[in-house]
Image 1 (cartoon, helix red, strand yellow):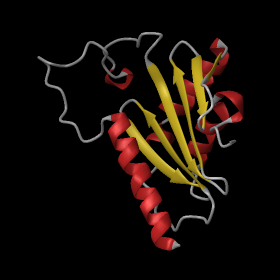
Image 2 (cartoon, helix red, strand yellow):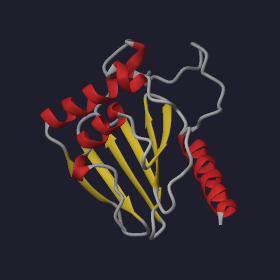
Image 3 (tube, helix red, strand yellow):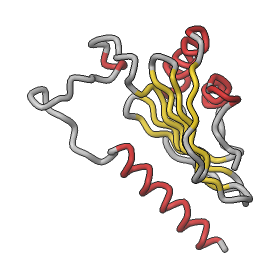
Image 4 (cartoon, helix red, strand yellow):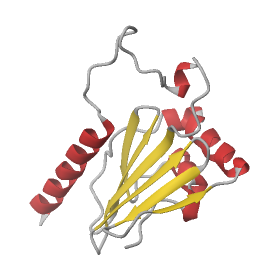
Length: 160
């Protein structure tokens, strides 16, 4: 069964890398997109730009869910094969989420888990400002928990 979990984790990582575009060569100033990272300090991001994306996989039921939050507070959740649902965070909630994501402690959260996976646990892939953090149940530092608590609908979408 361990090899199945390893395959699942490898498939998750491959999917996240494909979706987030990790591994691509960085843009040069001449071909850089007009939407620069908010951490670059060049400008305020556009309201429709993605603030954070959380992909949740695993659990006893084998969920595969996604939450995308935009800078204007609009968000979309996709649970399994159900139709996406959308909502809107209040400005105060967005400010709390941004503060959690921009906290220097969050910048120190390891990009990859270091321990053994928990049987039937969830794997979380969090992308913010072109940085991908993958964590599992039992390996969530306080700074990552702060981000999770600030997410809409009570945190990462773990339901089926």
